[in-house]
Length: 215
Length: 240
Image (cartoon, rainbow over all chains, first blue to last red; front, side):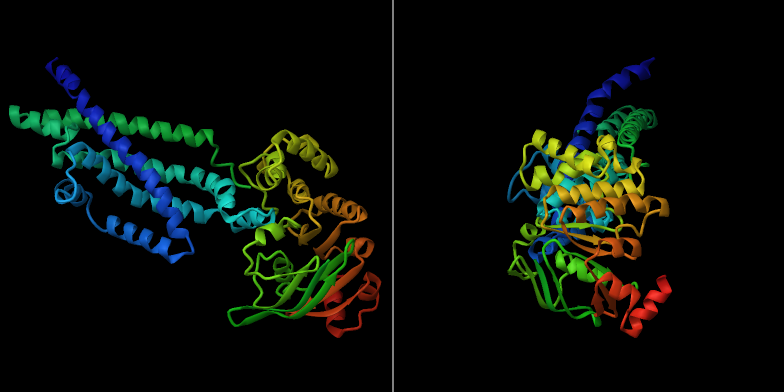
């Protein structure tokens, strides 16, 4: 029953994994919404920076981004490991979530915008009252997918010594020469968390009745 | 009330509206007919500035409106629009659809807006469906809700872009009845429709369009019984 004890030892690391994931998702959602709206703007000074951000972040590996923010920004600001991981995951997910939101916003029928216009609504009002509520609902399936990816990607934070699941597994492994056991423990934690995340997403999807939602 | 003069519009190289001149007086009901691709829908959408014409002017209430105006949303408040495909907001209830403009555009307190919404839904015979979502009602019912939604803004003129074309035949009557009642109340209306019964009974004037031009206009009797233009005759022989 020694293995149970180790399970317990891994709990704080699982907590750290969750924190990094949650930060990545929350920052990513905020950035994603902002950059999606910027990208769809008819003003080039808004759409071009958004395109650049998405191009840059999607075109480089997350591991590189993590290292860049932790080591590369030293000359400008010194960030600790954990805030570095939060920011890197947030910026990384933001680019993908921006594209998810953009797709969902563009998928809302043109007639919806026209109906809003014909009521005399301003563009911003149409976005906020008509388009976004529908687009956010449609984003839920791809978003839940992205959240699961974010959860697993948080393991890369081990590269900058954030004490999350994978780092702990490797540390225990090299101390005891029983790496497989500890990787298995980490895997069980990851699977548990992704399963719960999927279940929550399914629940929300059902609640919002996405299937019989179209007009 | 509305004066369209020398309106020209192109989609790329395609010239869709050619020198359109048209007036609609207060209280008048004008029906526009014509084949698909004749430009009738584009014309109506230009009046609401959902489409931008490249040349010509649109005067509403004596005021020349440029599509470059920053205040188009203010002008659209005066012009109600009913679409072929209803375009109800699917994430709001029937009542929510009707009061959206009142609450968020006009800034009316919600309780007051709901009272007004009830009155309007009563008018279009949809009061009993106030709390359901658009996905739960039929096409004819949706269109009546869409009419109530447009009326809520208390527009000076109502535009109808083929309001019954997407409906099952048995549902058309209810929508036309609501429109007829509106006309009887003195609403100024521009209606694209091929419902000849409606046009004969309600329209003051019928306009026939083809290939981006107004070919002929006159009273329903003149157009339907004695069309002067060959193209009008040919078109009518096809739809009758």
